Length: 278
Image (cartoon, rainbow, N blue to C red; front, side, top):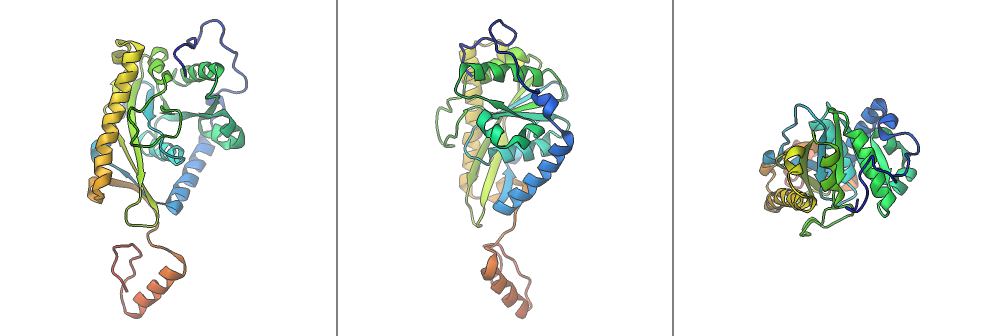
């Protein structure tokens, strides 16, 4: 996604090959994979938490662009779970590395589309496919706008220029920043944290130059991440709303012994770290 690339519809763009992401997406497979990711998340993570101040204002009409930072592999799962929870009326799509899509083809059936992140042609493909997706008011495009794994504390965020160009191909869209962070609190599994920022209209952003747009998008996401980080560092669950929770405790023989000891003493067993000890 580079500024020098030609915009969709201009001469010189490569022709699309293979089925479009819209044609490949299967609502049935998507519903199944949401359940798979929900179970997988609960098995390996302790909780998915959202800050109440960061609940999204879902637009009533028009396509939606959600852009975020990119701290970890788990971001894809967060997208899938957040889209199902907060944007169920929208068909959600997301670009991923083309090589990754070749290895995990099922993602193409739930809205992922492959992009060569290291070539001019890949940038052109991204813009063309994004234009197709955002041509419908009932579709959402989720983007890790840094284009690479980055530490949540990195400043500036160094967003890819392509995010600032999307409003040109979707002037009726709404743009929403999403901050994501991970951390370990008291349990064995990690905590995933998220918060959405105030929405912006594409027409509002079109009044700015591309560099000014990119700066505005970077600044809005940075504000979300800074506020979210303050809440995460507090280690206070009361600052969050749990969307999904995993299984507390260590498991295995250790929790088996604790469970047996609690039963022998006539106590209810609480496997959490702060639970009553047997």
